[in-house]
Length: 323
Image (cartoon, rainbow, N blue to C red; front, side, top):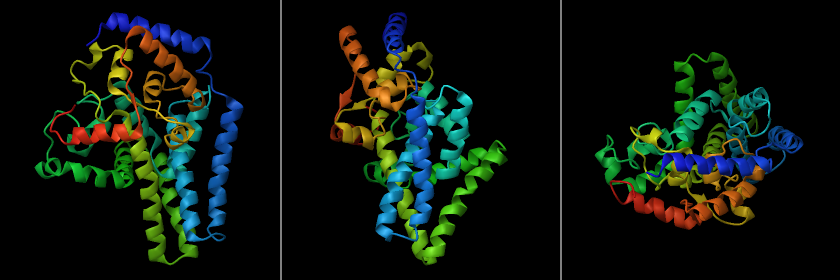
């Protein structure tokens, strides 16, 4: 554990540099056009069901669904607008109405539990999923742990269905019936449109394939950010400074523009965790500042290629304990 006071001062210096260059400021016109265009593309997809072949329909909605996932994530982090209420309003539309996931559940699971207690073996549900195979805890299933190298990748392919279950469970437990009504509409809209055009069983197959494609993509995006990095003892996590905690537990994925697009710019995960409200179109500039700053002060900054990150995850899976 590094000197907390010293690292706190380091972070204040880094934050001042970022804020002086106004990299935390959202570009309102850019993001308004972006969100209007994406919602428009969604509406247009409903029209395309009757106009294009099934394979093109799948590809179109796969790309659209991934982008809606990124937009929902960014809105819940208040990246689009200075006005928090606008971010909340549009996040309900994009998360609940257009991809069927609870905004309030994601806020609790991701923004609070994960971002505040990154890689905590007690608090962070992201790292405790899959029967805790990435923590130091034994888990409940000997079978899952014994075959985790295979079962983990299979579980990743059905991630969406697990998230849906947890999302609606949270909504109903907390009696958020208004949010439930917004979310459940998603499961009437898409199937109805497909059922009007295709046979019932074919429509069901199309829906399953779409969901799996979208969430395998998003699973890989989220998976490589923290899995295989240091696991923090939840009992002492508050003894870490913000800068020390996030650089210990996050990894960046290097690459060209196509990598940034594939990851929705979340491949700059260190910077995203240090500054969660930084808009994604400015995260590259923040990453340059952060990397140089960390190199100057001898602060760890873990950056690898996508294949190297997969190798690190695989090596972690081969052991009972974390790396």
